[in-house]
Image (cartoon, rainbow, N blue to C red; front, top):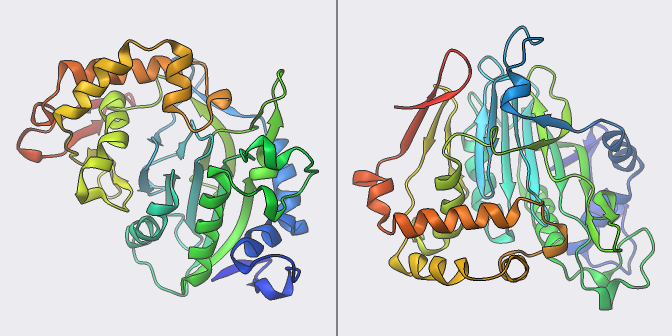
Length: 349
């Protein structure tokens, strides 16, 4: 069940008869003054950029410890072990966070499809330590933008209408809200900076996200817009990127988020994922495409991707070409385990 300002949120009290119930709950939440104000407050917070050299600079007394999530991954972290948990690179995806007020335990997921929301939310909730249905759970959503087709959105003002809700982003956000409403747990919405609240125009007039990522500060529960780079998206970046696409061919992960991190040990345990020789053949074909062709073929929002999107795709394909047999990466189908070193980096066990 969703709570707002400490009381249960009932859709029929906030939507008009012209809105469908499926879309109406999300629209009512987005238009609620409390969440509108929260979105404006988020926009006033400077984006925190996570980079290893900066985090290690002499001015810092102690290097921050964070857990980073790639697309379709989730992790649950303990404030006694971790300073931040977060994700970025979300265009039509959503950075979704749940924090237990009782103990600060926080779970974050990078949701990329309505198909993983049901099982994914169950995975997140089951990973909480000492959880009970009476716990108050704070919820934050940042990411996605108004990516509906131009034919439907040309006359749109500041708010959504049923005629232009055909983009990837809306269906995902709507599914998350719908699933939370059906749960018995008490979800207190704190941030809903998605869709219209997270959309701007670039220099060419294309819609794109204001923010692509978030972190939760574990000690306070504060949500902060965030971005990472190659040095801070760790450990095991390329293998984890490959899992995103290969998981669609590995039925073990049907409808699920990818398991990544052990809450109790503060270790990354990259769960195995199989890929077929078909992936290697596809990688060889894609490698020969131009950057523009890669963008339009491999992204749901080509005009909104970060400058390193194509380079990251090409690094992934090179790995698949060099390692077409998934058993080389996951011998005996065992996870790849990384432990945090004394200086805050990661070492493979």
